[in-house]
Image (cartoon, rainbow, N blue to C red):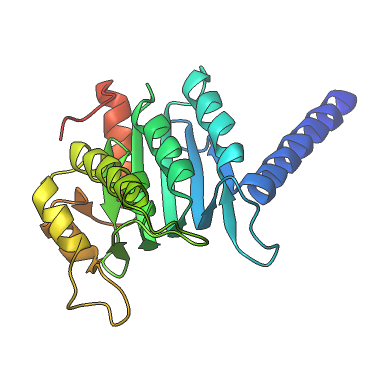
Length: 237
């Protein structure tokens, strides 16, 4: 009996160690202390895409998140996904790729914006079945930006316009905001001192139809539990 008890303790310690390592490496954890088994994934800092960011930059690596999302959706034990966002944005293609994966999952998903869900963080926030935002959080909506050399030819600006249309289309298909309103907020020149765009706080994001509900962790968890218990995957918006 004593040997078996020690073996169980070692297994528990090993499982705890694996969870702590997962949190350190990927910023995610699977909880099994509540009624349902939930996987919590964080999207923080800058979304890193095809180029490696400097070591001192807080970043979320999309090549880490893609296999996690697949594993969560295929896991017979995990019942739902909670996304916690505090991001300044980042690589557009990487962000949209993650948003498309999240929106296409079979498992119920709920997102919660904490601090900020800026730029390409907007599609990531609305990709979940139901989105939440805390009152103190903000979301910045602006046109596509690019760093580095840009050729001064019409084709380059056409490419930017098409990329912007992809973002608008995704956001408006997964929220209650209209295409025209999103474009209007993107091109606002009277709010940002050195830029074009708009900043919405939590209440404004909900009032504009960008985010579904105002709330924090308990409200987001309650909604996720309800989706799981009702057997609902996608909530039509």
